Image (cartoon, rainbow, N blue to C red):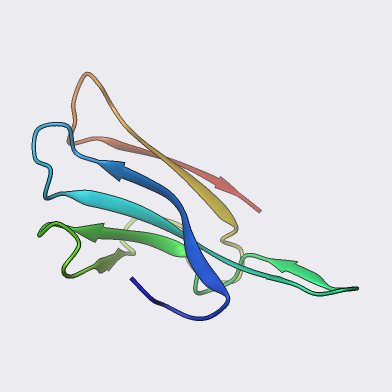
Length: 89
């Protein structure tokens, strides 16, 4: 999945009962010799239900915009339909 030249996947989890369902945390990050920017409105969580052929950004009930930094993901062992998300700015 390509979003931009300054954004890449930082975390990826797979549903334990359905290998076609994937969640990817995308992190916008730019670092230069004397410059560093972490996070931005391109950072976000994406879901694929077809084994990564297509992706949809999840925006309902999650932070969006400039305040989104690095994102961590985990799927609940007790209920694989629950995804835990950690945001760091």
